[in-house]
Length: 96
Image (cartoon, rainbow, N blue to C red):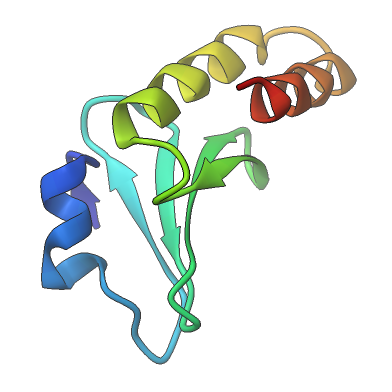
């Protein structure tokens, strides 16, 4: 599903947990993804390449706009080596 990932989406029924995990892809930033687990955990990811994704943070811990900014930074760095991208992503996750 494609939608603008923001506060309105998080409160809608479409972003609530189901029996199977699913992902919502942001329509404003390609690669920005919200993954919803059956347990109710909702996490932001930066997706690039075929099967590469980097966790940005959990919904509720960071705002969607902040997660989108972090995703943009991760995707900007993706042109470098994968280790550089993952190191940068970990640094973004740990920064306050």
